[in-house]
View 1 (cartoon, rainbow, N blue to C red):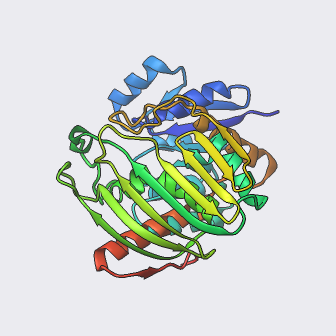
View 2: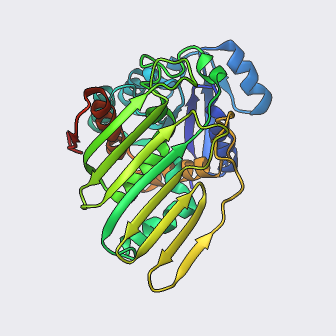
Length: 344
C-alpha cells in the first residue's frame, strides 16, 4: 500500500501524541515535514522525533507530493491554515476545536467541501473501546427507549495553566472549559444520545481561577429522543476525576467512567470492563494520557483517505458539539431556555 505523505503543522503541547501515532503507523504514513513558526519548538521537537522539519508553511503547501496536513495550532489560526491547505488540495486532520466561533467553523467546513478535500477532526474519545462498545449496544437497542442521558466532567487545572498567554481567552481558544476540555465528552454524549432539543444552563468563572472565560457550567437538557439529562463541566475540581457519561433506558443503565464501562440490564445481566489505568488528563497535566486513541484517529483518517469514505468525526459531525456549546453558553448568558436546531 502506498504511504500517505503528511506534514505536521504546529509543534506545541498537542503534538506529542500525534508524533507518536505517526511513528507507530510508519508502515502507512510518511511524515515529510514538521513546521512551527517557533525556532524553540523546532529544537525541542527535534530532540524527541526524527521527522524532517521546514521553516515555511509555503514549503508544505507548494509540495505536490504532500497528501495531507495535520493541523495542531491554536484554535484561532485554524480557519486560515485549513483554508490554505484546502486551496492547495491537501486533506486535513485538525485538532479540536474546529475554530473559536461556530461561524468560522462552518466556513471552514464549507471550504473543505468546496475544495473536495477530506476534513477529519481529532475528537479521540470516540475511539475508546468503552465508547465503541456502548455505541454498538445503542445501535442494537439494548438500552430500550431512552430515558436519561447525562455527562459530568470534573477536571482540575491550576492557575498556572491559565497564566499561559491566550489560555482560556475568547480570542485564542474560543472560550473555557466547554470548548477546550469538555468538548471531548460532549462529543461522545452527542454520538450516543443524539442532538438536544432544549437546554437551560448556568456558566461562571469560579474564585478558583483568574481567567476570561467560564470554568464551570451546569445545565439541564431535553434530548430530541424525549430523554432528559444534566451536563456539568468544570476545571476547578481538585484533583480532577474521570469524566462520566450515564445513559438510562427502559431496559437498563450504561455508565462510562473515563475508559471504564458498565452495563446493567433490568433482567439481571451485566457487562463491564475496567479502565486502562491512565489519568486521562483530568488533573494538572493535561497531556497525562496514552496516545492509543490518537493513533486510532490517525488510522481512521488514513483509512478514510484510502477508501474515499468520511472519517469517523468529520467537519459536519464536529459542528454538532460546537452548536451544543453555543446553546449552553447562550442560555447561561440570557438566563433563558434555548431551543436547539442542530442544522442551524
